[in-house]
Length: 179
Image (cartoon, rainbow, N blue to C red; front, side, top):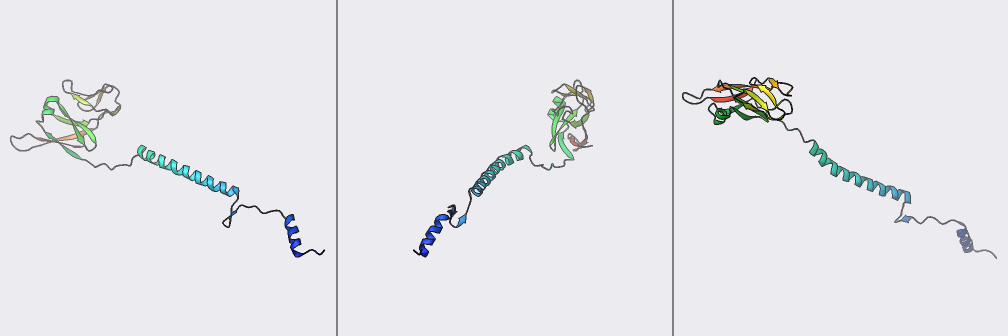
């Protein structure tokens, strides 16, 4: 019985283990490498989601620095301004900062930062008592800007006040500038 070449091939094929059938479209991929690709895709999509949520929050918390215009002087109006005559003070915008312009009992004009040095509240002037007063914590300054009572730790920043003559019979213009 001479075995045929065909019979030897069949018997030999039964003895060999079969190859894994994970071959798809000519590319061999194991279960471990498939898992690694899926984990990478999931992790990167979670990372992208976190970045998409956290970036706007971070930009909101720390807005960009805006350059502030340098203001060296401000025209505050005329010396017969009704608000100054009636109340004895007027709050002005000096760039981004408020400034309080005072008209004292002696018709002198003085200007100080309108921000209390304690907790940044806006101050007002009591002409009868010649006091600059902060209503947040009852801080008080004299008409030179020096602390005379309450919790403020330092005096108010002072500004220079100039009166500009507008001509005979006309009220003077008030100009406030940095010292």
